[in-house]
Amino acid sequence: MLSKITDFLKMVDDFVWGLPLIILILATGLFLSIRLRGLQIKRLPLAIKYMFSSDEKDGSGEVSSFAALCTALSATIGTGNIVGVATAIVSGGPGALFWMWMAAIVGTATKYAECLLAVKYRVVEEDGHVIGGPFYYIERGMGKQFRWLAKIFAVFGIMVGLFGIGTFTQINGITSAIGNFFDNEKAQYLNLFGRDYSITIIISGIILTFFVALVLIGGLKRISNVAQVVVPFMAIIYVAVVVIILGLNIGKIPAALAEIAEGAFGLRAFGGGMFGAMILAMQKGIARGIFSNEAGLGSAPIAAAAAQSKEEVRQGLISMTGTFIDTIVICTMTGLSIVITGSWNMGLEGVAVTTKAFQMGLPFPERAAAFILVICLVFFAFTTILGWDYYSEKCLEYIIGNKPKAIMIYRWIYIGCIFIGPYMTVQAVWTIADICNGLMAIPNLIALIALNGVVVNETNSFFERGVHKQK
Image 1 (cartoon, rainbow, N blue to C red):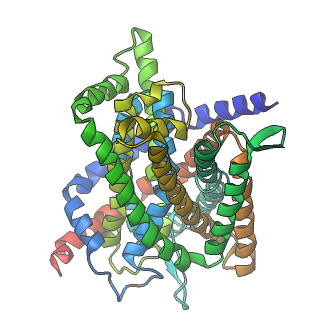
Image 2: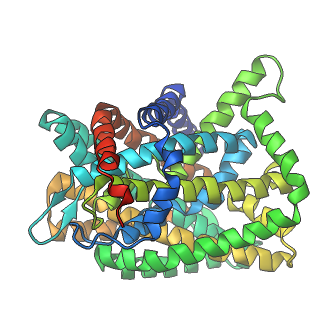
Image 3: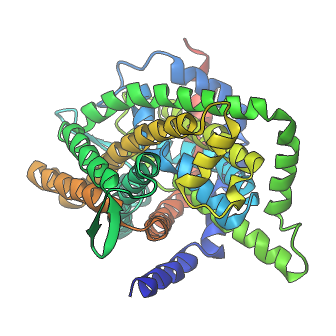
């Protein structure tokens, strides 16, 4: 029965993430990149400057621009950077990393556009309560006749939160890593749902569920407060550790890059196998890239809408740095570590691939290297859980209105999904996440194409007015 469910999910995943959606995602990002004249590259220094500069205190919103970025990063920097990259390379070969880069480069323009639109079309209540995102720029930008499309996006957003990025993948990645570290042999276990589970996994799942509940009950401001502290701190630690791996293996980096390039275009396969190998690398790389940086998915705009900003373009620039940080920096470093050490080709799965790369690449005892990764994964995934609760709550609020009691019930359902996440298989978890991601992206991409003229006009107006030159 389980194998039939797995096969069915794989069939749906292959259909959703087939060539049409891959082309749509890349084409949208490329189209916006051309329309914006490479803004994501030319204006990246300005975006980074805005990220560290003072916020617009007179702008409408619930949290600072930096807090909004950290909330978005809390939802993107997670298992996708550690487990997702490993899964992509194991399934699609080293070439999958190249397609993650391509998705990120064009996806940065996509992220800019969607976050700009989120601020422009957001709704600010009299009490300062803000709601915005693809559902509102579809309804208010494209017209009320497209409200059905906005609702479809919101429904998929709830699904991604409950069954995709938000819950199952994160808690499963955390507990698997903790279980592998403290009780890899399952010396102490319980039989649940017909399978043996380490007591370490069960206990860690309960503890993490408890801490998630503590934060979620406090709402957006508590989530953003936690994210502002945890995300920068853990990102710096993780990058520093991976820099050690790359520094000690610097002579192997050129060969790793060559392997990535060959894999991206199926150059190691022969005949018809070349095209098949390239498509597989594209599929896994782009799917995991979108899972990690969420460009085009429509999630980051929900956080951007809450920023205290009066300039849509400014917030769009700040938000697009999230894709650069997530994929070009963190995912690249993880991927290079995995390719350099060869841990992707050792018959391992999920977090075990990255763990092995850390153990082989760091000049520490294997237990110490594995522990460092476990700590990073726990905090990254924990903040992702928090960020996606906020996203999916806003999707629900768009559908049912601002009903605090209903939202609180939803939070407890979300917490319940966290509780059961450790008991799902790795393959099923990531397949479900991929399906939900793909379905959520489609309405958002349609809106971005339809509203590209608005994005271009707002961008041109901003730079023509010289706002970027003002202190």
